[in-house]
Image 1 (cartoon, rainbow, N blue to C red):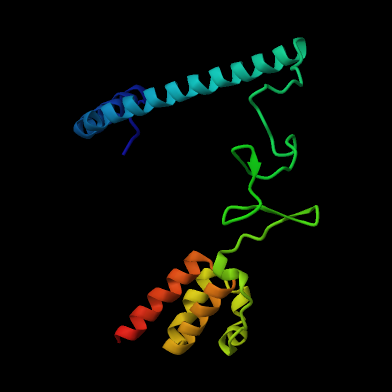
Image 2: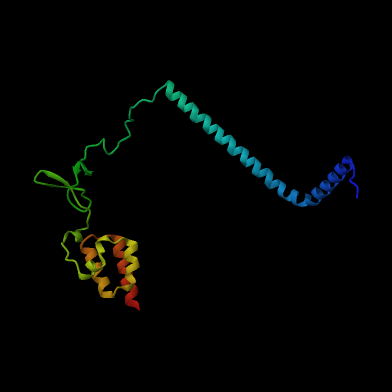
Length: 184
């Protein structure tokens, strides 16, 4: 077959393309609102980014012209600015009781350890504490090991926790496990 002239091939190609695009028209019409919305959102975000860049450049230029003062507002206080006097209630420092952060002995002030009143007693560690290396366990690690422990071991751990560190999450975890293990 002989090849058609260039102009004829061009017209036939244009007609076929128009026919294909006409067939795609229903799908294109459905997608058109989404495409427009996407393009608008893109334009809005681009404008916001451009505005932010302009503001940053403006801040930088203003800092060069008018350097910022190193003054601290009166209302701003930081830990290193304040004397380490501890908590004060009605003009008196809290050095005793449950919320005391500092203790004063012989004129020397030391930071108090945060423990509950039950934790001040010295506790002897049961065998299970050393066996599990309980002191170094995180809550998640302890949770993983609870299934293999007996009720007696759990009760010993709970008593030790209450007498030593008295950490509420550990106490709750152990108490809940004792309840579940006892119910079986």
